[in-house]
Structure formats: structure tokens, C-alpha cells
Length: 309
Length: 309
Image (cartoon, rainbow over all chains, first blue to last red; front, side):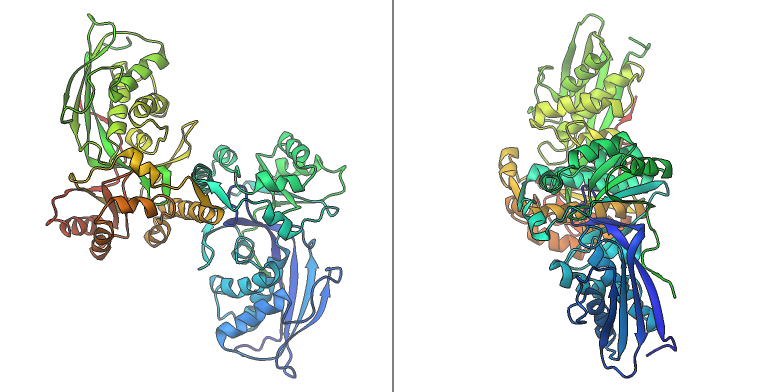
């Protein structure tokens, strides 16, 4: 142990992955929803014990060997070659299974909290692998487009998932997201995966690559018109929108209310609209106030996970 | 006619398209090889007449309705609703069928020269469509990754080929290219096309998109190490390298001499190495001085086509 700290509390934000044309490789963090994770030293224990989970409707495992947050925290210990006893609490402040990176928030919170408790021996970038170990346990996949923005903040491009080569892309200050979650819709990850083709035409592949690269360029130059033209997904959205009955209607409504882009967050059911400026983002949320949806209005969260105590 | 100008002479540079992971969508212009195009007013004529072509080994058509440069020049007249009589000369100062955008250089030269002769009523961006009409006649395809950098200079990303939505990406001042052309190798475009799969896995598509977006990010941040990691092509190069017998050996030699990347220019047979700085670029060329190759060492040509007289 490197510090006299006895306990830390962190907050890991929700994230929007598969951002438009960035299927599997582009995500951003938002303010508002997320996971609070507490870790405290427990000298009488010799392992991590999850003592409490709230806000999960009883769906998350207390078994530390199966819990995303504790697996990520354990991976930090493993990376540092440290053992010890710890108690962990997880307080979910975001919907579960919503397509907003719930498991990534837990994993990021667990890894970051453990590193803070140990005196921050690892950088945020160094924690990517540990957080991904937690995310992998929940999602059965190795895609960092939720974990990376949750940990690093802002907009993250995953150049290469296997090696976790993650590039931070500058987030325009006026870029806002309006995220809509309909708790009545459940999307099974397996079903969502089946909606994505296993092969695409080379023409589609090169078009998607051109769009993603143009979107990244637009983030650098804060060219909102280019963002609008670029953020078009030819790979996942065409199939996945079928899983969301109101997609077409909601898309029209969001665009009319001022969104320049509208799409599925992660594998859904949450939807996101992007807007130029706070006013437009709130206008978009207002356009859905008669629907039984949770709406989050946020600029890009450039902090990522933060320490609360 | 808008000016008293009687004649203009322009020089349109060679270009490297399909730049690594940017198959069909990314290209850059180089200094050195290119096409000189002369257009003069000919009041006794009522159309464009190609009077002279040099440096083409007799391979290019003098028939103005079939010549890439004159078709592009005519497209400028059509775009402006102008008719008139013109004489055109084309002096090729670059190898033909080399994968260095020979037809694009002619098309860009033809369009730009006509616009200059008319007093520059159109911007360079406005000339993209006319130049593409010429390029299309030669290449039977509508890919702007040679024409765009030839016309605009620098590094160009084609977000969308059909609408010619072209984004200029900043070229790092220390980015140099060494281009190698082996005149003994002939690659038929049709054969090169057959080497590119018509479908790719979605995994390959998203990987390629991530690489291209990361490469564009690296151009903005001048991160040469990220350029090196990103400029990997999973779509065209795996098949096309088979058409170039020495590809593997030349690649090793270029990387050993200091290249951070090596690939096929356009559909070949020209090869390009990218390097950080002029010294490395010349070192790479030196490593091939015992081969019967034409070598061009150039930083990125940020001017594009220029007026000579």
C-alpha cells in the first residue's frame, strides 16, 4: 500500500458508443448519469468484497469474481502485483441495459477507484486494460468505445481494440448531446449483434471510413456542418433501427427540433441527438417531454471519471 | 470571354492516392512529376483542339472529345455556359500508367488552365466536378482521391465521392514522400481492381475506418508515431501487393532506410514510402539507387496545380 488513504469514492460517467459512423471505435462521455464506486481498505480481508450495490434492481452480482467493477479493481491489483483486502460499494445512478455504457461505467469506476486508493501509481491510459477486463466480463466483447471515454473523458477514437490504442479527439465546446432512454424497450445484446451484418461491400467499408475520418476532421476544426454530413452510419444503424419501433418518428422529431444528427447509443435502446449549442439540445429534449422517456442533456464530458471523496 | 489573356500555361502535380488505409478516399500531391497544360484562345475555331501532346509515347488521344485534359477544359466551359475556340497542348512530365495520377494531372491541368484563361471565375473547389469529368473519361471511375489533391494541393480526404465532398487535411511540414516507379512493371487497372475484394468483413471495415480516422487525427497533431501505427491497409494492399514482385523486399528495404510507412501508390506499380523529414526521405531513395527505378523525393505539395505563365 502506498498511501494512508482509507477510502475513496469516484463517479464514472455514462458514455455514448458506436457514435454514428464510429461503430465499435468512437464514443464520448456525457455528464449526468453514471456509477458511483466506493473502495475502502479492509485489513481483515485478503480480497475484494462487494458489500453493497444500489440502483441496479438486484440485477448485478455481489460475487466479486463476477462483478464488473470488482473485476476491474482486481485487474489493477494484478497489474501492480499487489494483494490486499478491500470493500467495494457500487451505486448505480444510471439505467441498466440502456446502451449508455452501464458496465463500462462500473468497470471504469472500479479500476479508477482502486488506483486512487493506492496513490495513483497508474495513469488513466494505463488503466484502460484493467477497466476492459471488467467490461469484457459483462459484455463478452473487447470493444473500448465505452470504457475509453469513461476513463479519459471527451471523445475517444479506438484505433485498435486489441491493443487498446486509444486517441483522444478534441471535443468542440459547443457540441451537446441529448440522450433519450425509453425504459419500456429492452434490447438483448445478442439480438442487436445479429442485426449487424458480418460482411459489408468494400464500397460501404470505404464510404464508412471516409465518413469517420471526415467526422474526426470536423471535431478538430469545429465544423458543425461537416459533422452533420459525416455522421452517417452505413453498417450498424440500418439493421438496428428496426429494434426501436419509434426510431424513424423520433429521428424526424429530433432533427426538426434542431439536432444535426440522431442515432442509437451503443446497441440501444437509448438514442442520442447531437446539437450545436445548449439551447438546441434543450429544445430537442423539450420535443420529447410528452413521452415516458428519461432525457439527459449534456455537453461532452471532457473529465471522464472523477474522484468525489 | 472575361479577360484579355491570350494564353496560359499551368503545371498539375502527380498525386499519391489510396494512401495506405485511405483506399478510394485519401490522396496527397507531390512536387516534381506532373503535367504541363497550355491553353490559348483561337478565335477562328469554335471548339477545343488539342494541337500537341509530348511525353506520352503516343499513347494519349489528340481527339479533344476523348482527351482527359480537353474534356475537363470543356466541362469548365459547359459549367459556365461559355463556348469558344481554343488550342491546347499537353506536355507530360511524368510516367504514364504509373499509379501517380497521370490522368488526374491532365484533367486538373485542363480544367485549371481553362479557368485561368477565363479570368478565374471558378474557385479551385468549383473546378472539382469539371476535372472529375476528365478523370472519369480516362479511369472509367468516379474517385476523386487523385484529382482533389492535384487541384487543391496537400492531403485531401474525399468524404463522399458522388457529391465530391472533399476535406483538406493539414499536411505536417516534416512529412516527406519517396516515390519509386519501376517502368518495367505494367499493371492493368482492370487486373488491379480484381485484386480488391468486393466484400470485406465488418470487422475489417471498422478496423480500416478506425485506422483512417486515427491517421487523419495524426495529421492534425503531427504525431508521426500515430501515423505509423495507423497507415495500415486491410482492404486493397493484401491483394494488390501480389502484382508487384519485389513488394516485400522493397518494403523491408524502405523501412530499414527510415520509412515509417510503405505502400502502393494508386493501383501501382509506383510505390511510396513516407518519412519524417527530408533526410530520411533521401536515405530511402538512396537505398534504391542500384535499381532501375525512377525515384521522386518530395514533401507534401501544398500548392496543387499552379499557373506557370
